[in-house]
Amino acid sequence: MLATRALSLIGRRMVSTSVCVRAHGSVVKSEDYALPSYVDRRDYPLPDVAHVRELSASQKALKEKEKAAWTGLSKDEKVELYRIRFNESFAEMTQGTNEWKTVLGMALFFIGFTAIILIWEKRFVYGPIPHTFEEDWVAMQTKRMLDMKVSPIQGFASKWDYEKNEWKK
Image (cartoon, rainbow, N blue to C red; front, top):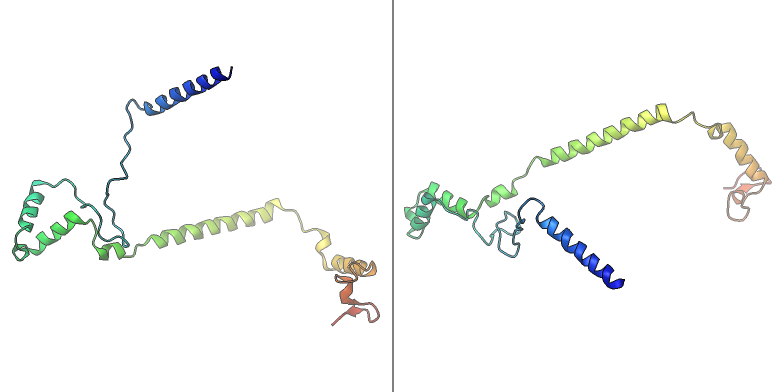
């Protein structure tokens, strides 16, 4: 019985795995993350590979021209060579974005939306404040607790002077 259960589990596992692989009619290829990749990061300014991996004919000609003296290259050609190797310059990477405005706007929107919900709840969901919160009721409750001498050693009643009928100073 144990053997049949184990074999059926293995069989189901193989079927489910093969179904997942062939879900869209073909095998899904995953990217090999062991190979070097291009990234624009300030903390890693010189990536392992160039930005443009497959060069066009004009870019190949420019790369051949690069092997000679750089004084013969124009400024535009130097910039194009730079753009073959890098997507962004260091100044472009460190340039600030306006993303903080979106984040702040969304945060304020959700705070405002929450405030509207709280106002609505206070007005339509919650009932009136109980009578036990009124000052007269709290005074009577305090007087009753003092008469009962609640926590006479360290608590409430220990702070009341029973001879002078006032709070201790």
